Image (cartoon, rainbow over all chains, first blue to last red; front, side, top):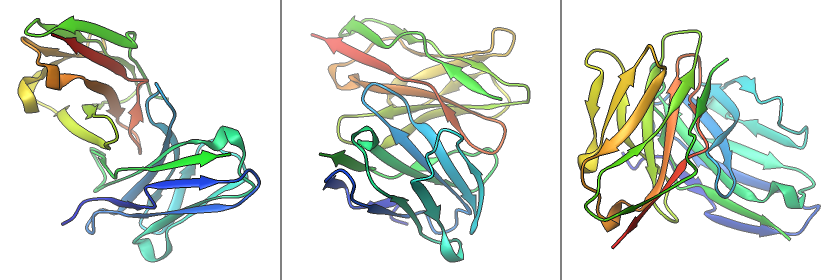
Length: 113
Length: 111
């Protein structure tokens, strides 16, 4: 088991462009979470999946953000029409469920210029 | 709803001194509690966890934490820190469907 992997590790994009990130969870984990982390802050919840079903999406999440987890395996997070405020570290984590001990990937650092 | 409060954004301490990083939580259901550590340019890794049983839990690198239900706290301690302990420490609570994280505490160990 190689742990949670995220791709790319770094992404620089121009404002207004669309970006997509990928997360491959630990294979036997049925839950997958996306968080956003800015400098000096802890991870902020974005959304999570139980298998292929997206069960919760943060109310703080703009409609420009969308996530999928087809077939309950890997997940993608897409940000449309990026803004400078979207610059952050995007973290993916997975777990087996209760007690929801989350295993994190290395993150994707997004810079919008 | 659940929440986590880490009152100290930064804690400076000299090498070999003891340290305590504070974490308080709010939850209407039974909780599981976690501390994660994040080194520069690395992901979050689990330091220790409280699931049930003994309220004093031990983790990696000599850290320990005590669950106090009446004070809704889960403070992290180490009796003697090293330079290599310099990192971000993040407390998390889980009792619903997803872990909720605090803002983190930056531990700065000085020689």
